[in-house]
Length: 169
Image (cartoon, rainbow, N blue to C red; front, side, top):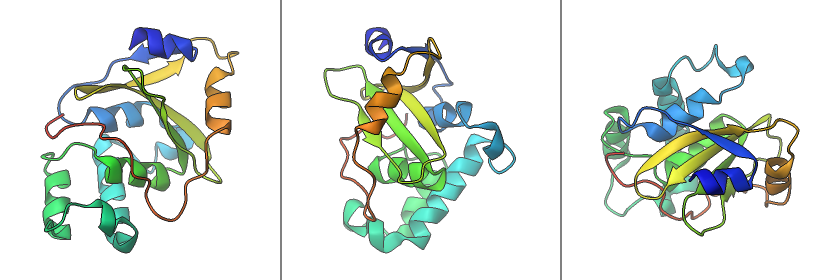
């Protein structure tokens, strides 16, 4: 992960690996103006889950057949479900952020670019294992901004992303 992060002028910041590493990494990068609204990772999980419920029709085709909304919500609320494609997209939307996931394999970063994003959150992903926060190694380096600027803007329906985290992480 170090080499891929460095390629984009980023440095790693580890977060707890307690099953909510995605949310810890996101929370660690929240801008000051969102700290009052989201005081913990749980607040982000709750807001993203509520967003999925409120806009369920946009997400229905991306949730496994036979899974009821209540079941899905309970798994997220109880920490039994890792951040999947739907939860990652919902998180980017509720935070109105460009969310970039730099992977430790050869795959290109996944970028969820919002049309009117207020900030950027960049995560490192050790495939199938762990998320971490990525911060600028040198604030003058613009590689990360160019990466985001060239990505397509999010549409009304969630993107079909590659699997990011397996259950339990």
